[in-house]
Image 1 (spheres, rainbow, N blue to C red):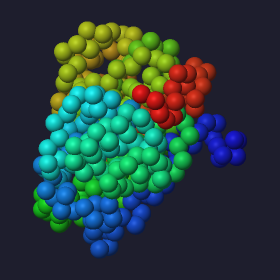
Image 2 (cartoon, rainbow, N blue to C red):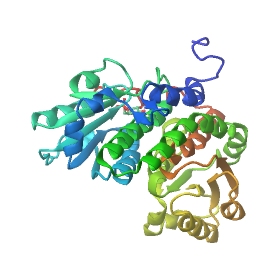
Image 3 (cartoon, helix red, strand yellow):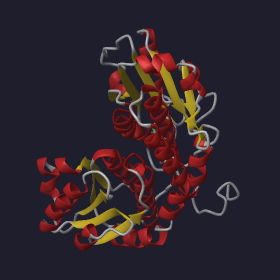
Image 4 (spheres, rainbow, N blue to C red):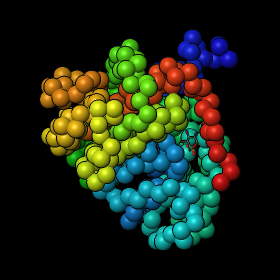
Length: 369
Ligand code: G6P
């Protein structure tokens, strides 16, 4: 097992650090920047179906559901296709309305999650075309879906999902970009710019991973907090949810993720000098708004950990700590802002002496409902 961990203390840390290569493996052979094209067999073979889609329904559980939420922003923003994101466990029992020309995308790392599998079977029984985004090759979900695309993240052993999440977002970005081009919702120059930016992501993830030792310092300061709040807007709202989930899963500290603007409708009542609040505040998308959210937190003496774009000034003035990530285009920011949140939960759990790779009560793949 020590050899499998490749010199890292835990699988989770190894998998966090594998992300630059995992993301590269995800787009290798699919993103052809010289030709300025994206090639994905599962999408090409069903292009007509995708182009006729009135709606995409995403079904998933856990971290994969969070990747689905990011995909909602990506598909609507880039390809202008309406998206709904559903917990598979709710969808399957709700007698959902599935129309002709709806496409269901099922996201699952393991490809074995019972609720997701059941949601797929239900959708198929109502005539839907189901596309799978799985990591495990040949898994039940990969076999049950009509077509799909693998994430190629390599085996993920740590129960808390890390590289599966970022590679799911990568695959979904590729699909959205391909459809955006096919539908003409994106200009060729904008498309090219996205391809170039996506190819720069692995190096930028490597940069983001350099915050490692600083994140450790922040973890040391807040490891005894009883509650955490995670806030983000737009593309980074799902990242806030995922950051909170990571902390809950492995450190057993209660954490809530919230869209920053919704803070005033509830969570703001919880804020005092004992509440650490992680705010994702990159310079793209609603930056001014998030700065004013941070001011509101500051006025209530909350402790602010800002995830900011390199060189940021405004948040730095207000926050107790800032963790920098490189700059990229808005739709790709989740691939970078997720990194320090993974590290933060990892170090807090290690400092609290928790079983990071196999947290209590959780399973890597939930094959019962
Ligand atoms: C379990 C795992 C999570 C995972 C979820 C969905 O709860 O502990 O890490 O996100 O199942 O799993 P899937 O394999 O379908 O992505």
